[in-house]
Length: 113
Ligand SMILES: [Zn+2]
Image (tube, rainbow, N blue to C red):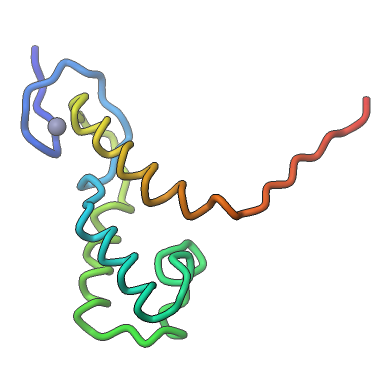
């Protein structure tokens, strides 16, 4: 029996996956980037796991929007998502979440036998 995609309500036969309440939204991601650029902070400082909003001069509107968005995309549960949504979400994720990690230094440890 066909199930319904939790994000776009299209019918799909894909098995359930762990996914956020809502897909990533390009306009919110762009807003985050714009705000960072305007205020001269890194994306990580505003939107990273260690971001500290008490150190930033967030206006209340922006803060409310970020909080709402964070709630939507951070809460993960098992649900049915169609292929189109998964692909789109992956694209946005790669564009906004992997790119800015380019200059992060990764350390790989090789242990001698
Ligand atoms: Zn969908």
